[in-house]
Length: 464
Image (tube, rainbow, N blue to C red; front, side, top):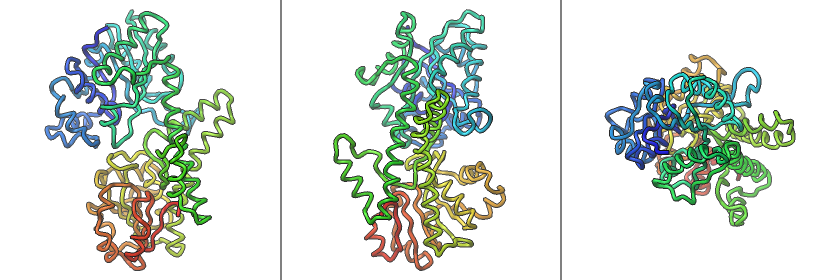
């Protein structure tokens, strides 16, 4: 089964980079990324490739190489679906904010709309690939919708979850730990569909790194991977509070246990909490699935990971208030970083949003600097919470274009994203520009305590 044309529905953080690399590595395959968001597609097509809507190191170079050759971005969804041999569905699956499963279950509205559009448009057989993160057995719903249109088109449903880490997405795509593909390998046609996607990735991924499973195992593996990673973050963050109470140093504890080969050192960096689009959403989804099967103890176990993460964000913000003599009303707090991690402009579920919201509830005046996140996005994140009016958010929050501008005359500075440039700041200059005493709260353990205290800061970091 030879693939000549690929369509991807969704030009976001997964679809855009993934399809760009597929186009780069498979020059004989035409790849079209479609989205109804005209502004986003226009950005992907901007003559200046540095203006593409997603910031990822190396991504602009990949797009520049393939765009116009065999990589295209379009709002004509129907045409791309009609021409495609293989269709990736890479649309948003946020946590439901309404109805049954509110606050936990994945909202599959956009997935179903994609399936119905494919069913309406398709006139030839298609391989449909789940690229969005989905609950177990979503493929069955897709199959049901697609195969009951009565137009005689055959569909093969595959699951191909993404395991990208934002900030290293291009690197992860070029040299993945594994590519996971789930499908129906019990039938000849199902096996051919599986092999067709294997052959696409085999252009550059070693075959031993391409794993094939049944669809259900593939869907659950994605949720499980993120749950395990998030669990490690919450585990070390829970111990950071114990370290603060007992006099231990969480960095030393993490280094000691990380030397155990059974544990390893990764994801043992204590912080103000994890963010991003996947960890919380996927764990809540896992919790909901477990509850739907009556597995309440399993659900409770995984829900505690979220509870701990929320607690860590509140604890960090409360420590700022406590340290500043139990009031931040009218005080200027500089926040360095708004993205949920460095090397991305993604702010979804960023800890910075919730720390800011807590401080704003205490009537702090916040000044934010982030090298890649726009002023528009920062205000949109705060407005989305609905805690206060848009006017209040704009009166209490100022977004600036320089870390030194943010810090000037601040009562306290908090580091919320581990951008490398924050390590390189002239901290003597920072100290001189802040109000005294100068309070510095390191939510990402980016700086050395002794060095900062020698410069005159009253320094507070997570876990010691």
